Every structure is written in structure tokens, then in C-alpha cells.
Length: 250
Ligand code: 13P
Image 1 (cartoon, rainbow, N blue to C red):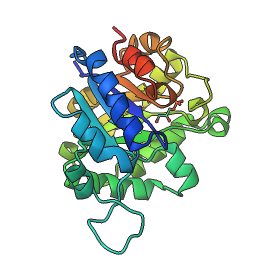
Image 2 (image 1 turned 180 degrees about the vertical axis):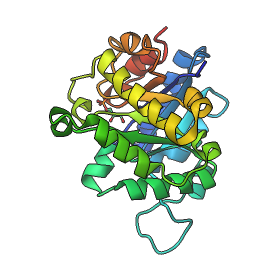
Image 3 (image 1 turned 135 degrees about the horizontal axis):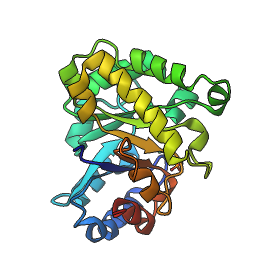
């Protein structure tokens, strides 16, 4: 049985004060959620304060990006060890917004994810096709390219520490969720790529989350799919009520 993960990606929302208030409100609402891991991904500025506010709770903290370098003259970048020190356990890598606005390529995703693993962070690696790619019937090919290049030159042991998030770009922030069946189809495609590259045992234990307009009213249908091992939630993770309703989907 794969232990589900419900993660909230706050994107560029919440000041430090807002973030800490949010954690104080969220904590009791998710305190008895043993059926899944709970992760929140605040902006860099709020990471340390959120990690402190979430200490001795079941809420874990993720960054939204990481540098592939350990240190150096890389203005604006933040290294894996800095994130660890701030209290992060996870890091989101290759989100479509970073691919779209910051020229994040599969090769960069690969380098960042190796840096995250070396820095003892759990990478949550995002993949997914655009609407144009889906309509051109290229979903499978896009996932295959993102997978092969993004996860190149990893051992099965490295790969077993990774969480994948399937986030079809056309479903992000649009209110247009993939149906559970469409999501599950892509998850199956991804899992068979894992089987090919890393073997059946690793594939069986890899968590594949779905992301894209996940809300309290569609989480149950998504989680009913055997292939879907959790969710990466954007908009609905910004309010404690809606995020806790998603965490407590059972
Ligand atoms: P929404 O839930 O707002 O569609 O965002 C999804 C997402 O991008 C999570 O990383």
C-alpha cells in the first residue's frame, strides 16, 4: 500500500505573518490525519517560520524550487542545504509555471533533483502536458520525454526517494480538473515508464500525485482511483478550511 501525500503549493501567496497564522489554524484540523502525509510549500521567505510553527505536528514543509549548485555566485538561487536548514523536508521541482516562466528544461529538472537528493530533501517532481500537446495526441510522448530526461542517470535507489506529481497544464488554475479516469490513464503511463527504467518493485511503491484544480468536492473521486496516490493542490490549499477538507477526504 502506498501512503498518500496531500501537498499544498502556495505559489507566490502569503506573507510570513499570514503563513504562520495559517499553520496555527490548520494544525488542529489535520492533527488526526494518519491516512496521508501532509505537506505545505510556502514561498522561500516564509519557510523557516512555517517550519517552526509546524514543529511537532504532522505538517511537513516543502520549498517550491532549489538550485542545482551547492553554493556560489548564483544570484537569486537557494541551495538544498539552505532549505534543509530552514526546516524543509521536501522540494517541488519542475512545476509547469517554472518551466513556462523560468525556462526550466528537463535537463535542469534532472540536475535540481539530483541536488535535492544529495541534500537529503524529498523531491516532488512535476510533469504534465499542455492543452495543445493533449489535443495533438502527444500526451504520452510528452510524459515519456519529461520522464526519460528528467529522471536520467538515477539509480533505482535514488528514484525510490522521489514523488511524482502529474499536473496537466490545462487543468492548473482553470477549474478544469482532469476526470479521475483521464488522470489515472496518465498515472498508468508514468508507472509503466518507471517499470521499464527502474523495475516493478520501485514502480509499485512510487507515489504519483495528481495536481490541477483539486478541490474538496473532487478529491474523493480522484482518490478512489487506485493509481492516484495523493494531490498537489494550488488555489484550494490557501484556505485552511478547503485544504483540511482535502486532507481529510476519507
Ligand atoms: P490549482 O490547484 O490552483 O489548479 O494549482 C495546481 C498546481 O499548480 C499545484 O502545483
